[in-house]
Image (cartoon, rainbow, N blue to C red; front, side, top):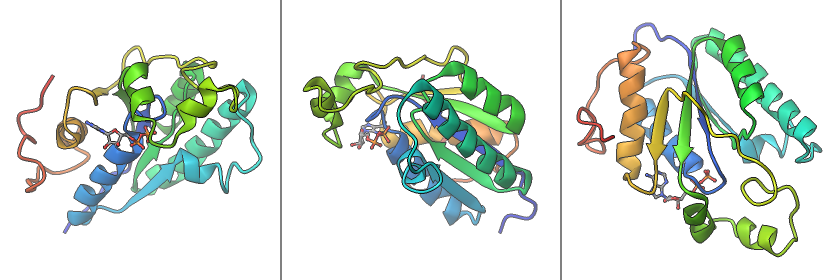
Length: 193
Ligand code: ADP
């Protein structure tokens, strides 16, 4: 049982298909198994409710991130661990929410565009290439790579468990979580990269 938990926002940013949702789900399972209170804010889900009606213009994308940041801040200051999985392509607004929340790590979920496009989990790259979707990040809209992420996961070179371990190790190092071992995390104390 976790005695006194400190809140933090773990912000996963990266291209569509890079692995944000997958890593988020893995982290969620691991942290819940240790009784941490947590909430997940997934970009796709948020766009169906809190940010319903927003477009993919720069202005609306920034608005979307500010809304997610606002909720993440409320939860974080109430000692919840928040995992955000959102493309969040623009550096300036990422920096803005980081400064506001304070207890925050930026995690760059990095896979080359070619790999994301090959995975094409949701079939969106195909549609973007065919011109059926406009302003698609990586195709006809920019993704501004994090310059100094707290953690970088190279998902085309690491297993899901290795990527998640890097994040858990960082949380441990910063004293947001206590060390723990799990059958899923054989590499937990020997991170790659
Ligand atoms: P996103 O949420 O960033 O759009 P998804 O998590 O939906 O991306 O898809 C990522 C895909 O990449 C999944 O099919 C996942 O199994 C695969 N994958 C392979 N290696 C990794 C890794 N190390 N971390 C995360 N995903 C990985």
